[in-house]
Image (cartoon, rainbow, N blue to C red):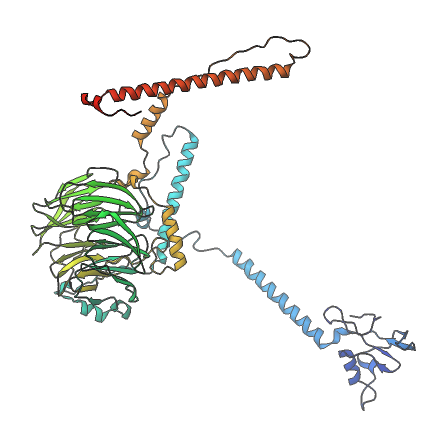
Length: 629
């Protein structure tokens, strides 16, 4: 590559061209070209002239004036920079880049031409898809129009796609539920908690611990929905909230009053305490937020998370519902069945279940003043009631020392067990394990609803009597509150192995907790939608719709009174079209105002006549009442 130089010491195109100029035998450059000139200068011994190796003969001579005004000459050379080392390196780099791009293109072309041996998505077993399906398939037959048929078909495609995607995501669920399996001739009942803690990993072994609090017991316990935080309430006034995984204490107060029950609300930032006289709400720092005087003498509480309802049962036989999001009482009924100290909720449909001293079990919803279901379960008083997560089975225990399993779909008894003493506390786990507290003994039964069991799954003996039981969600842990404190027991296979972080996340951050709270409020279900059959929510209320249509048809549509007015003809341009229209409009509006005034006067006189007739009706002695002007 060759270039003609007219300006001294100018670099162009990333130093690919170098120029050298010389005038009057003096060097005017300090760049690499001048250094090369110095290197090959004839003054040095054995050096060759400049123009012999790199620089050719000068093309022309150039005359210019310096700062002092003196005339000087300058030689202009033509330089071949293709022979420089830097240019050769640049060319090799470009060649390597071009070769790399060519290899990439060849690889992509080869991948396009190569056929996939397993085209499409991976097949999913039908049994796994059926597990995520909701109800029967939608049939597009019988629709009146083709558009309705197409809409139903599109909806069915979306439901099937959602079921397939949910089944496909099971590959991400890396945890599996497992139970204890005994060898031949052995029984899992003989395995103690210390034996389990010695063979499991360190993280699981830390879940078995005991809190010795003999001064303020017995204790009621409650876990949050995500299973991260624990709330304890002693009968003698001690209330404490802790992060039981890290053993970090959130708050600890003494309310200096009898505590009957404690419950977490929608988040771990608020909890309710049923004290001797009224019910109080506290935050996670132990600061009192509200005093609910509408809930007095409360013995048991249940919180419905999807409805933001706090249900309570008191010693006077009164059942109350408080909406904690607005602080108002939604409903309250007198059961007329005496003291209410046995209570639980159905997690599938939010129906509150009560146990009574006559051996009956009643189920309640806020919109009805009478129980939706009333069952005679025992010949004597009911001591405890528990309902599993799916809402299909119910366990009851009575003073007659029997434990019964009921099918809530048919309301028939499935199994009946005779226990040494009546189970005062019962609780179901997420995997269907049933825990019972009988005196100071805790027994856990495996698959007791679907088949008859002959021996408990695990047994643990405490130093004092059991006050409350609850399985920790998403953990193989059973929390037991007793007279001398709290015990956390390891129950293999009790909890759900994998949790949905969008529904309940044990490891959520502060920002995630705030967003979850807003989402729960937006998705809040009204209290009047609580029904015994949870599928009624998605069905059409035919009765209500028919009543609405009938009321709509009863409305009498009255046509407005027709008003005609024709102004007389006036001369001198007073009967032009615009003036005639304005005059007719003004007269018609005046007539309408007169009609409206007459209607109002008639309505007022009618109301007065009704009030007079209303006062005249009633008792004969009402005539002696004081008249009101």
